[in-house]
Length: 270
Image 1: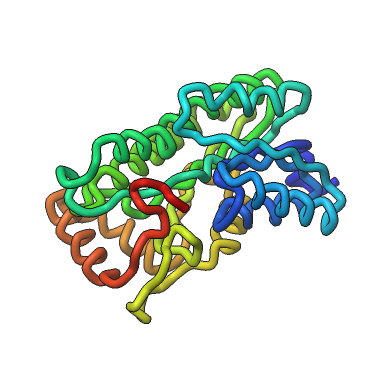
Image 2: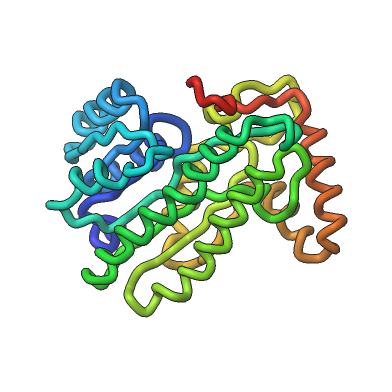
């Protein structure tokens, strides 16, 4: 048994596991001998991933095809995990709306609020209690560098990631005496379906496997980690400058990313 499996096994729950960063977490954890509960909307992709992980690493998987915007999404996840010991939760699922906030449909904004903030809150409360009873465990929140400031045209998305960031940092201290480690991971633009395409060849995209690698290495050692030197520099600058300046800086960053589009449309048709 690996050290990671001994501390955070024998099962992990990963939301948004069907692609991108979530999929890379699944591969990394499976290679450590940790069984995986794969949670996402697209059952066909989950089944394919689960079969691949079992064949490659000899671990067990369970599939939960559920929409995290649903009122009672926890019931399906609880049914699939009630009889197993979950030692790690990766709150990875998320999507973004962008553009002028008042021009977007409010139901799309509410859906994003449910996926990006409500679901990690509910799942962390649910599994965190079980981890506290066991005396060990870990919770990872996938935040964003956009969560460190107000971001024009991405105002609500940035706010949801700020929620995740602050919640994780507080819980890291609160749950440490119970043996539960909590980490917020803040990547920038990452080569995943979330970022559909880019016409800006200077955009420093991060490899999603690198995000998973850094997160698992720092879990239990830090409460927050930023992935990538440029992203770290951007986040560091927010600590030195007035918040009004930070908003302008992030507006400039997003203009630099002009030509990069988000893979999840507000209607989440993917």
